[in-house]
Image (cartoon, rainbow, N blue to C red; front, side, top):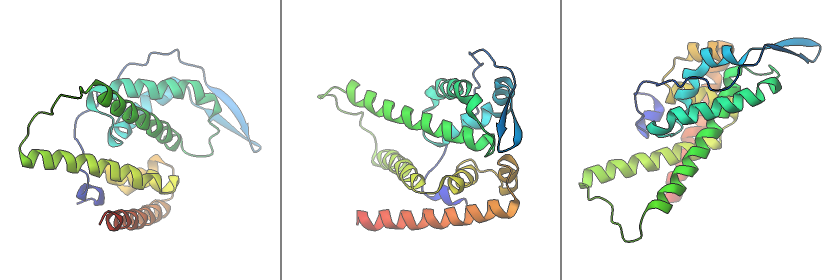
Length: 207
């Protein structure tokens, strides 16, 4: 069983992919330290990576009904910033960072709307003790995962999230991020160690 599944039960829904809604730019070239780096077109990025962005948003807690809108918002950012991409890291790493920021924005928005729309005298629907415990446990686990991931170096965090949250194999992650396989395994090992230590520290602080 993957490490993350011990504290966070993720969903297994299928991605419903929204159609692109912005005009696609042409391929551009940028000069990067004496090397010419080809910037892919928005069409290419969208077709090749929309499912990856969708899954990343889901892994970071975007609610199912909001996934299509969140994916579209992420690609609006991609469309605006694609000419700035310099090719120093794999484009999936860049997309992962964008999706993560969009996911954080959606979670904050969802929490604010829930508080604003909840009448003071409204009582939550009564649920059985087991259902309440499961719901609270998942919410607390998701918050813990996000808090811990925020403290892990981005390069390691990307590999960790793709393997532990997305259940991808390390060789697949290495190919996606254009990493040497040994480097991918090393980053995963270090991220797991950092994750375990952070969770223990949080648990100790809560006692």
